[in-house]
Length: 224
Image 1 (cartoon, helix red, strand yellow):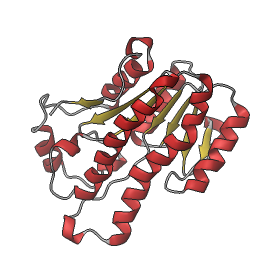
Image 2: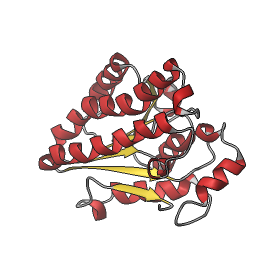
Image 3: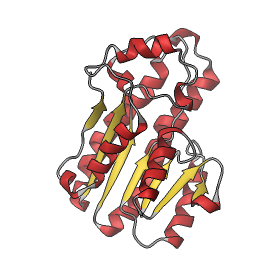
Image 4: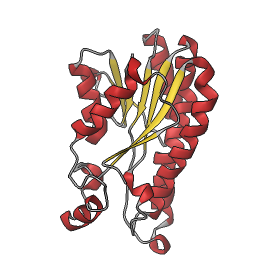
């Protein structure tokens, strides 16, 4: 069984649907439940909501192999002008949400003594892009957290890695102009606009047996 957070839109939706098309048993987490698509209601910024989703999944499924944490939000603003409520929302959703999802759901992987955890960062962590200070801070925290978690879970045959994509046109980048996207792309080693399938290729690799010795890494899709 595979769990994908942020399964109702963007990259999370693409990964969720791709795993479905591969005939994988997969359940999604999203703010709004969709029983027809095996999506369970879960607000990742709310610890109690995560625990509720965990109880549902624990009762329904015997074995969990992978946890893929894609859920996240962004808001561009200069560091000194970022509103307090938006700052807290970004940190609560991206950083604390990822931490709590790992904390709560990793117990199901530990029980099987085998599994994969994939957390999501961004190429922006390495580029110091103006207007993304809080967003990149939340994602940099995820990278550091994941490296430590990888060490803590290694004895249970669980790998923990991050995928850090370059810009992809999704709801997350809706407020970013084409000019701004182009500027970011030009800072990548591979100066091309990415597609969600480019990210899915890395997900497939990390989920496979070929990646059983890859852990504690950040895979930057596009390169920096």
